[in-house]
Image (cartoon, rainbow, N blue to C red):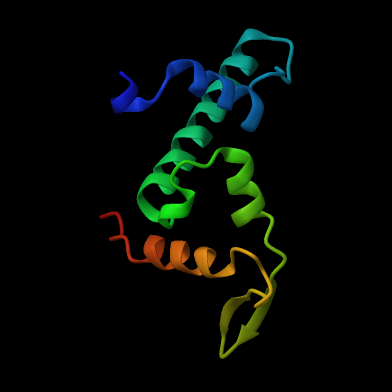
Length: 112
């Protein structure tokens, strides 16, 4: 089971610590059930992106590092020639990895 999907205890720990599963936001069961599924979906999408579309240095990182490296990027949205561009500073530590990951994700075929 370790080769197929990792250690189950690590997955539960990552769901709690990195994706907000440790605190239930509402009092009723249906709301907490929906929150649990949203956390599980976010975890699975993050693993899918990490395993298939990020550079090799990020293949074993957790959700906290993904947020730090890719979602907390101080970039500028620029409008040019009727298109929106994301301008990432050259000094960003993982700027090249961000551009490489975005290029790989954009190269995916569209859903039909």
